[in-house]
Image 1 (cartoon, rainbow, N blue to C red):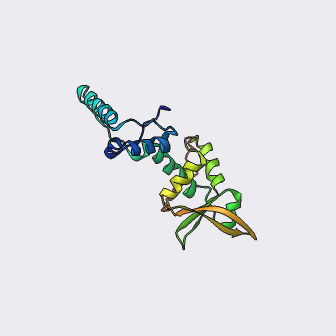
Image 2 (image 1 turned 120 degrees about the horizontal axis):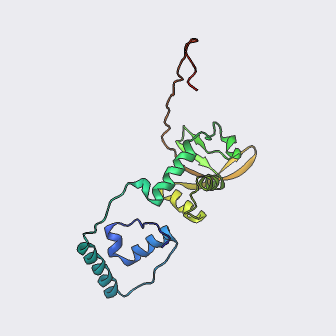
Image 3 (image 1 turned 60 degrees about the vertical axis):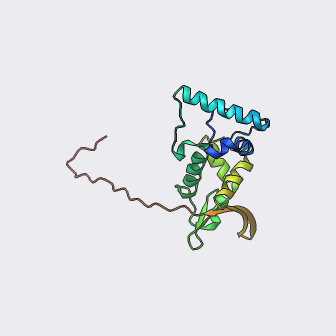
Length: 177
């Protein structure tokens, strides 16, 4: 199914409807419903096969999953070099963080453009919206330059400030390149 691992918990395997929901959310695929006895037989066969071949479930870090990759791209979009200093810059395709309210505002189309540039084309628009809702995001509107703009508002990511010092060369030293 599209060559990507499916993110499932143990309970998702036991409940067929949870498995189907996970397939739809992550793969845009809806497996056919099986009778309960067939489902249990299939799960037992897979578990036995896993035991016979010394296979096991390997826990992977969150950033390997599709949702983890999306979260990384979202954070990069919200906190990266293109972040807006004032809300009017939202119209320049930049996310703006209201530090007093601790929310970040952006247009969905600008996030989608960022994801395409980052070559993340896994989620369709409705899936992106659902992932934003999953992190307590909500669709909202703000007045910017006498125009009402439809935006998404999500809890702000922690801003990391790092300083990179420029090396100093004396006049008699050779420039390294």
